[in-house]
Image (cartoon, rainbow over all chains, first blue to last red; front, side, top):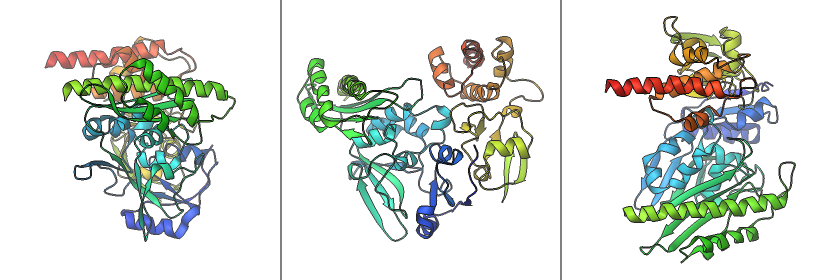
Length: 295
Length: 160
């Protein structure tokens, strides 16, 4: 199908974009990479009156490390393929690079953006999962105000977020991964590039002896939004072997109550979430040990 | 609104409605019907074009967005009437049957070729996974792209 008619603006400055958004609110949609929004427009599931194209806004496409706050800031317009190969991310927040590899296909990754993926809030989205696991923050602006929203307060159910109608995400901020950290994402989908039935992300930091010092674990596709698994993370601390990792991964079940649908039963999704979390933890731990050898 | 961009190496100015998809404008206004429009929601890959050298779905972009950008469709892959390596390999390997998906595969394959990297079969399958074919079972398509990509990379290595 074809999209319904809309009015289109393509502002040159963030201030101008925010003025339009302030004026039009709910009757406007922000167009970034368009890889989630345009299918909705084509199928007429969304028929906004106005489209605000932010692709030409300057200053939203950078990836910057801030050593003073030990954070990495990713502009909302950074494309998925940039996440995969960016040296700052590979060195300091590689979970985002790992996650981006799983998104769709190359022609999707060349356009899709991190800000768009998070604002779209798909329950099986890879970047919402990774940023959730890392306890990232979203930097948000409206015409007259600015705020930083922790990702755990951002999602409000399927495709719902805490964004006000006049607000726009302009950057995503995550803490730098400590030294001796390994990251991994695992997901299960029926066909390559499909939405995941379930997914898991892990960032594991080890101490000098190789025991787990800090763990970050989240699962996706099994709840309205990605879920952090603090019980798993606590159980992993101090551990060194795969049997204990598997036992810790079982605790994923205490964090989720998966939905049942035509694609999978609740039990099957729960089974997948646990198995994928165990795989992600194993793989992240192995990479953390490599990082320890290199450190 | 009027937009000016470059299509297959030629500057083009065209009058469009903001909600017209790039794919529709390329086909209907510019007559580039080699580009095929299948699913219209970004799944099948038949409408893939290069935008500034990167593969994109032309059904998920609006024509209004490509002002100032360079677009290459399947019509722009041959140089001076000579088919490129991927196109030639598709003929040699009989990598098409009905031909509907072919323009998308050729554009994606050409993008891989232009990366100038040696790719193993698994990497090629991953790279082509965003293009659907309902006739061939993919084997000959992967064969063709593998030959084209790795022949070029092997030549490049020899030149070094």
